[in-house]
Length: 313
Image 1 (cartoon, one colour):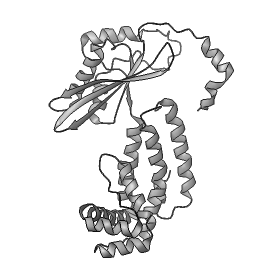
Image 2 (cartoon, rainbow, N blue to C red; image 1 turned 120 degrees about the horizontal axis):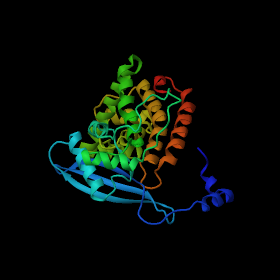
Image 3 (cartoon, rainbow, N blue to C red; image 1 turned 180 degrees about the vertical axis):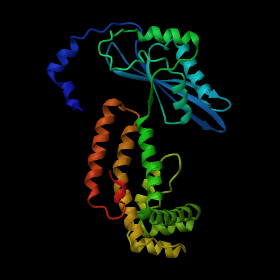
Image 4 (tube, rainbow, N blue to C red; image 1 turned 90 degrees about the vertical axis):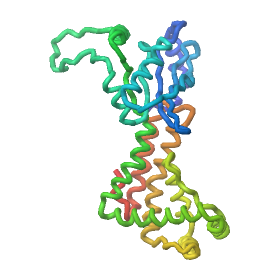
């Protein structure tokens, strides 16, 4: 939580300059793994991330993109990742691998982790501590079979789950929001469907409000927020005119209020997701401040809510 300006301090720079760095082969590296499908084919992609010991600067590279045939079971995924790590001689150098929250990834790393260096309880204070070289442990385990490095779940993907899946479950399980959430989103969906399928409907919206409706798509959650936010930008009188002209049910005042509150709550989440999904400068030092700012923004909104109060922490 230290400010970024800390690294500009002369004292800090002097301290860092006294740290000796050995040249040669990279000793520590982190990897990421992801699986996706396109044109009825599945692929495993991996990237590598490390700190250049000479500069020192963060560096990254697209590492592998391999075709995966058959089912994406945990053992198949584990074998592929282990093979790629071994192929480049990095099995003992990978500090962690980051993946999404897919159950197959989670189980792969649970099943193929090296045995704990110490399974004894910490209560035995008098017991002598024995230090073991992690590289030696991993080398021994590798001879016996597949061994994967420590697993980290993508913070962006986790936050994305909270933003869509968890919020959706809460809205549908809460008696105070279930009905209004369903009716409001159903009317929005009808507008999106009509505007996307009919040129005349799209032109009607454009002529009346000067903007086109945005249509959400399943591969990116933020698109749902953007589509709802575009609707709540339209004055209710114009929105009613559009619905009447398109022969659709009009969004009521309470539904409109709910959609406004939904967008107010979700806006900080979309900003946080955009930060964490960025291509550059997305590392651990960004995560905690982003979450802190997100929480403070949500608490600021809490007092102004009327319908969606239960969504707030």
